[in-house]
Amino acid sequence: MSKQNIQQECDAYLWFRKAAERGNAYAQFNLALQYKRGEQTERNEDVAFIWMGCAARQGLAFAQNHLGTMYFHGRGTAQDDTEALYWFRTAAAQGEPAAQQNLGQMYRKGRGVTQNDELALAWFSRSAEQGVPGAQAMMGVHYARGLGCAANIALALAWFRKAAAQGDALAQLNLGLLHKNGQGLPRDDAQALAFFRLAAAQGLPKAQFQLGAAYAEGRGIKSDQERAFAWFSLAAQHGNADAQYSLGSMYVHGRGVGRDPQRAVEYFRQAAEKGAANAQFNLGLMYANGQGVAQDEECAAVWYRLAAEQGDASAQNNLGVMYANGQGVDQDEAEAVRWYGAAAEQGHALAQYNLSGMYQAGRGVEPDQVRSYMWISLAADAGDAAACNSRALIESKLSVEELGSARALTRHWRETHRV
Image 1: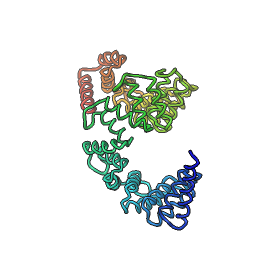
Image 2 (image 1 turned 135 degrees about the vertical axis):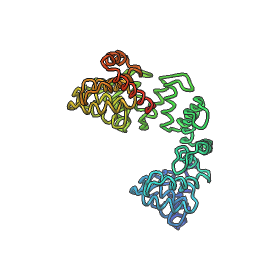
Image 3 (image 1 turned 45 degrees about the vertical axis):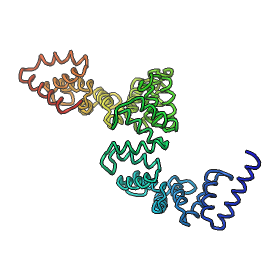
Image 4 (image 1 turned 180 degrees about the horizontal axis):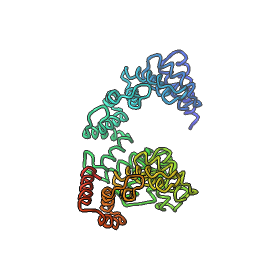
């Protein structure tokens, strides 16, 4: 930077400072921005907050919005949703579009107010009509999911396109997902990839994950595991649980990177601690098998349970096995039946096979050869090789009437479960 430019910036800072001290609201706002961003002076959010407050109290709408943002994030002051809401609402009432968007987010998240999708949509609408891309993207989200309105994929597409044209990363991501899933328009992996690229280039972790998944699966582009690994790594660095799980899987199988069970455990744990059921199940497997970590059946049972309680069928089956055998938990055959049953109802073939065995032997449940046949038949039809062999043996022990009942139960299950 030249001496002339430095002098000009210094002069600008001094002018804003003098005018701000005389009570000029615009100068107070600009001085606050300089302190907030570290322009022409040392960055100091505490001082920025003071000057922003001065401008806001004089009725300057964009200063009020900035002050609300500082309260919202706790920058230069203690975090305070009530104060943030007050200043967003004050600025929004003056027609400040950024404040209207922020007020919509308060209602969407239920921060400082009772969560309300209808009011969130109303405020996003006011902001979106003024051309704010972030608000337009949120309009798309609301219409796509039916939040505070009837779901309308055509309107969602229209709003996403408006926002994406202005470079909004969230809108670009959502357009990519709509193309990927064929919602509201023909499925097009190449178009999905193009939108994922745009959003990923702006640093959006969910888009980086989707781009990694496209490379991993060869969707819209030739499969490239090394590039998939690179994009998953970027998303994982920003805390994306799906990417962390995917990296764990790549380290387990040596895809796109050298096989490393210890690194796999690290990434599975990161995702598992965020509540990702698939990562919790895989972390349980790593503990159960002693891969990348010392074998610990109690830890395995803990992680299986967390995933099972979220409905992960494989975790439910494995937890059933642990209760049946007393591994990592006290043996409890009734609990084993309960968890086998939860997984079997989801169509998990191995759980259906295991549940059949419990009914056949009367373990944790009254012996019932008819239900044993039903479950083994479902497992066999799902492709379980052991079940195919066992079905014939169980069938040979049933009377004609019992076999008829068992087949009727099997048909009924198939009709009521679209698995």
